[in-house]
Image (tube, rainbow, N blue to C red; front, side, top):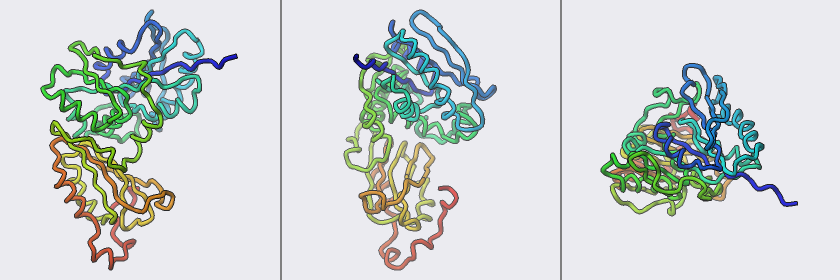
Length: 357
């Protein structure tokens, strides 16, 4: 007896449900079932609405309750039995999961692939707005300020969400391309943020001009590697159309107070940066560096002794009109000087990040 074939699943993410609708239609054919999650009622009623439909029309609908804990976690927990039911019906040979606007594909996919052996992720598709993309990647507006947070603890900003949705996508649909005078620049930006992605423009009606589902392009290991730590020169795409990616490295530690004072200068002109840094006052810790728009964050990744690497700093930064020499000079100025390396008791340095991570 042969093993039962797995059902391909395509995931659709993006901030604008309006722009996603024609893409969802393009992903859905006669043998596809769509599971669509909406968050319009989340701020007022604390629920996520879901509906299931196929080519024949609506099939089922309901709600997931979201409490004060992690909204994304509760969504995934509630979603699993619904997807299991859809797969068990056996009526369709392809599922499209349209996530709520504030959901990232990565936690969805990692959970689904580990818990639901009946499905295989086929394509992750992200819809971005050509008119608003640079603005969304460049600001510091919180999702909560737009009524898009997935629960009370969700403190992500719009830039962070937009970047993470792009970075995990096999296909990026550039909607409203006809309203932009810099389509090639935007395509270049998307490739800098995720060289794995295939950029597809949409026509005036929002319909994509290329394949957006059943592409077979999803590669879990490659997606996880790109969404994880960026630490090598092969992450740097050639500059062009005003888009530049810079790789900065140092074998010296960063002075925590100077780094904190320079945060605004570091993210100036940078839409996205990620990496691993070495803080002088935390000599054994690997520290995650991440910025999106005007916001930067640091967090603990573990100990340097747990890796094959000597302690070092590595940051990859992408920007529009970014001056690589200026950025490198700002970062270099945050490093310990030769005299500080020789004389200071590093662990006694003031720690402006105490209590933050």
